[in-house]
Image (cartoon, rainbow, N blue to C red; front, side, top):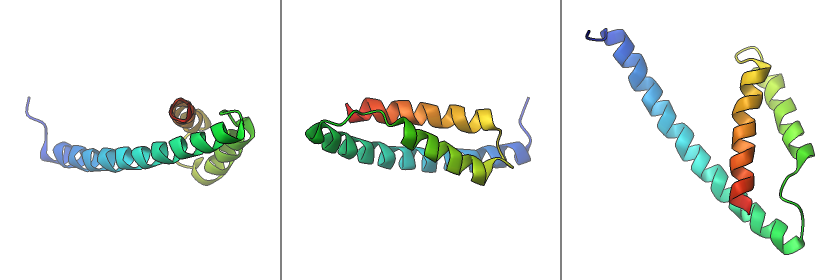
Length: 88
C-alpha cells in the first residue's frame, strides 16, 4: 500500500529532526570526552548523580506538559550512560 503524501511529508520532517538530534548528540559526546579528560586529570569520579538529578529536574519542569516523566527520564538516562562511557 502506498503511504499517503501527508504521512510521507511528516516522516520527512522527522528524518530532518533525527539528523539534528544526532548532530547535537555528537556535540554533546565531544564535550563529555573533554569533561572526562578533566575529571581523569583531577581524579574525580565520572558519574555525577547530583548533576543528573539537576538536569532531569530542570527538563521535567520545562517539558512535562509535552512528555511524561518516564519518557524524559528514560531518554536522558540513556544519554547519561553514553556520556559516562565517552568520559572513560
